[in-house]
Image (cartoon, rainbow, N blue to C red):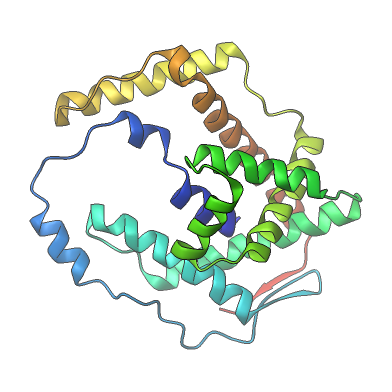
Length: 245
């Protein structure tokens, strides 16, 4: 989900970034390239109805909101790579993401799956903790200041996220990783970090027990995403979808 990606990516520090060292190489060329990138997305030519999914319309406003957020996130990442992807490709990816979300929401409604206020507040507490915020209010203020998202938007997005996670869990089972899976995941991360450290002089990777909670969260999210993609693929086969971009 597009908004889910925005919230997690910009508020919660990724584990590998926390473990890795800073790049001390020459950034002048990259900075010059990134400064030449457009600061605002091209929103011209977007139709009033971007897509129709089994009769449900995805309108221009919803698309523009999601696309703008994705563009800004990608622009931030491009400061490292010095290269922005083509906007036409990004628009298609965002449209596909919204179609996938709509398919999942339709399936969740069909199965009577709902997200309670208690579940949403619990998820907000988790995001606040992961992002280093002292409270939910501090997290909401950060999202408002950095993303322009008001409280209602954030809660609605989290409600959708919780609802869809319940659907995926119901379809594929509990995504919680076993200790063996966590050990293997950690081993892969150490090998990756070791290779990067040799090339860039990175910091040592923390011990397994020290970052086990973060590993569990990352692997659980990875397994959930894979199950979600498989479910979307299945739903898409029999769906009536039209994208107007």
